[in-house]
Length: 155
Image (tube, rainbow, N blue to C red; front, side, top):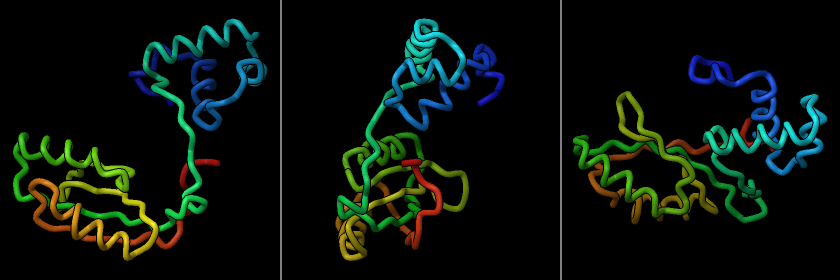
């Protein structure tokens, strides 16, 4: 986590960020013990890291298999118009589709790479045909189905 932007972070801050990124529910006393500080200074640092937006939130990581959402597809999306207004319209529309886990604007032969999670290939095909393809300015898509997740969130 070292870069010029993070030069104000010392080794304790960096270690706090590493640990809470793997376990956001770690008790402050345990965090303090692991980084070699007492509880109060550790708590002050953790609060400062949140206030300075190094830590932007905590969330539960859900088990997609338990929820029947095992099918993952990566879809390349090419737009018919890439002027700022068209990009903004697409970006806004993507936010309302819960099956889209991630959407990244890409520099390359297509415009966006979208990670989509559904229950199965039929649900994905329906979502692609009825929703993704109908998003503003979508001209074509290309799909890559994930066979196995080798590295994802640490559980």
